[in-house]
Length: 125
Image 1 (cartoon, one colour):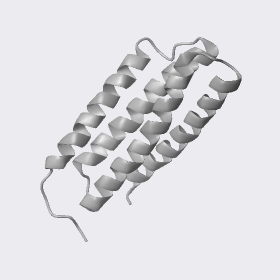
Image 2 (image 1 turned 120 degrees about the vertical axis):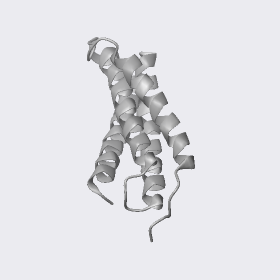
Image 3 (image 1 turned 30 degrees about the vertical axis):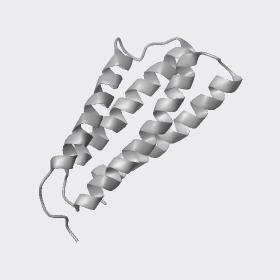
Image 4 (image 1 turned 90 degrees about the horizontal axis):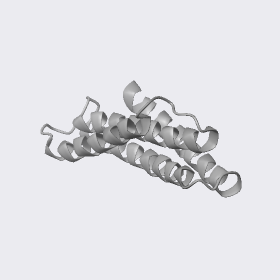
């Protein structure tokens, strides 16, 4: 697995951990529904990113369209979930329009993943 895919898996692991922490914070510290939304997106986005990396790896060692989708899904999830969690916990905005930007990246990432179904080429190995 090359460096980009390893980075996405690393981010996914950290997002999953952050999602569990956000769920715990929502249950024990702050009942803000945005925290529960952030937890759900972080955990589901983490699992999705790992799955898309697996799809890309199944295509072979070279860069695949699914790699771009995995990157967008991971970054979009991270930005969207972080924006919601930071606002719920500390009432701070990461930057204006952070959540909508992350959500848009997330949508685009899943569209790119869908387009990966049409990538041509032989599978290595």
